[in-house]
Amino acid sequence: QVQLVESGGGSVQAGGSLRLSCAASENIYSSYCMGWFRQAPGKEREGVAIIDSDGTTSYADSVKGRFTMSQDNAKNTLYLEMNNLKPEDTAMYYCAAGESCSSLSLTRRWGQGTQVTVFS
Image (tube, rainbow, N blue to C red; front, side):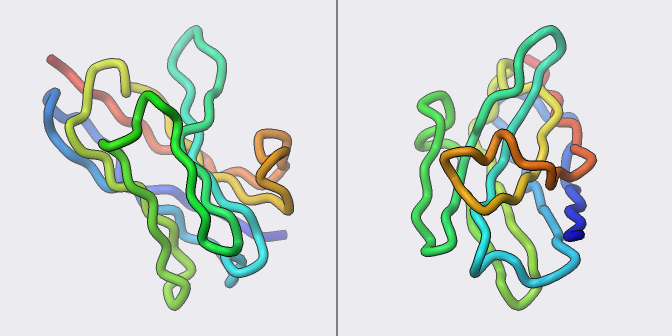
């Protein structure tokens, strides 16, 4: 069973930047759909960014132009570069891996999450 470990969260002032990392226990990026999700207190989990096994990326409208996802296959690591952070970006961020991007939110492969807090 592949394991995912997120890191890089923290507290930052609005307008600042953070880079999240998701390290996988094995090389899965060439065969899995990978993504970042977030969940704020009292809200449903939402998709932030997804990258398919062919490298195709998609982003939620709320983060387009501010967040960039990338991967380093040699390190089995997925990244989420977050710039111009806003208070509404405050949430627990999770990494996920699945066979299909269309059903990624239903995958059983999740990391433990990393907290991002943006203060004004």
